[in-house]
Image (cartoon, rainbow, N blue to C red; front, top):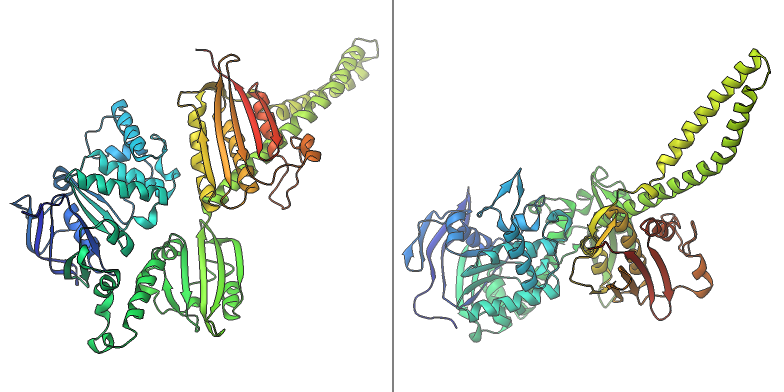
Length: 604
């Protein structure tokens, strides 16, 4: 549906500089109505600068911009939005402390009360956009608690809410899941059918060939050319994108296509979501991708051809010498939890690699930021320990209270007898010390909070949504198929939100540990109108629970797991919390393992 009459956007001889650095050098670019226009080039070719020019973040020094036939001296963020230009940036452009609703409508017709966004219409529209996108995101949860791909979808919802006529995607495919990218592809074709225009920036040539009408190649700030996709093949496009780094003589060599494919593969590595560092045989950095740079908080301009010993320093990483030793001795090793800097916890793996003749080629390092996972584990362990101590304290206090009461009664009885003033004084001292013990016992009882939880009306569906957000990274890590069959209605119950979250995090984490990679976990809720209760079932296709230990799984300190992190209290505490909510928790294990939790519903 591309209109080939007059471009909706024309940029002629555009020059942009950042201080002494020339970012765009006489670039021409045009975009037609109903066109999907690909934009490719190496890192720092000028692609993102072109986007910033249209968003009003930077201004041109020279050149002409025509938008819908009118001359535009420069865009501002406000005029860009008014002209219905929507942009999804390469780097997240969200406010982490604000909710999804606030991010979607920030800067546009907001109603605030005491600093908080208050608008049911905005919430409704946000939920409608999320439903259309096929994503399950809580509109009022601060998005700092969402995964990076979910935050990216919030940013997309913000752009879609303004109903853009021109949509710009800046290198987003590495940030989203395959399912979310399927929605992006669908959105691109819907835009095209509606006569809207798209600028799609990507290093992935397969994407460009799948849906772009034309492609423009930028090199070192210059436009090398604009071609119809139908006139290109993939090798030709790769040549046009990367060949500028070779001299004409080198291009005539027989291995030039291999070189270009190598550059293409390097770009793929640089855009992987996990941190990757490739070292040459001398342990110098050959490639460090963007994720590794972000995790290690490095300056990307100061890492190329640097020795790995200058990157891993003991000031930031206590195990730096052990890692460098493994690299030096060409050993394959793994470190599961390393404290990096003051806040991060990382996993690191070293893999020496060789060619088919067993010649050593270098070392690959894989780095993952597992800080969120570590903090979640610490939270669960901490709450388990506190709860178990509280339960123990309550048990001890109740046991001591009985004989203590008898002693107090006898002391009161003896004080009434004719035993002389001296003995009365002694009994009063005994009574005083008994009162001190009573005070200590009451303190122990106050430590046990299970029976005095801060109960209030809550929506169990919202609680489950927030639990899923917390454990979503673990599901992705093991590529687990997560099915959710829940009632769309509100599920009103009377309970403690934090304690119930603890229960369902424990049950889901147990399932995640039990299933294999690409396993299946299902969460279902079913309302029983006849008994005015709700049943929540967590099931998985993991290794199951042996019949002989089934009677003991809710016993305190009982566990089949090995490791110092496991306290054996998780299911016991779950049982205790559900019991305090006047509910029931049961388990059945066969081909699937199912935990059933039944809780009473609030009356209408």
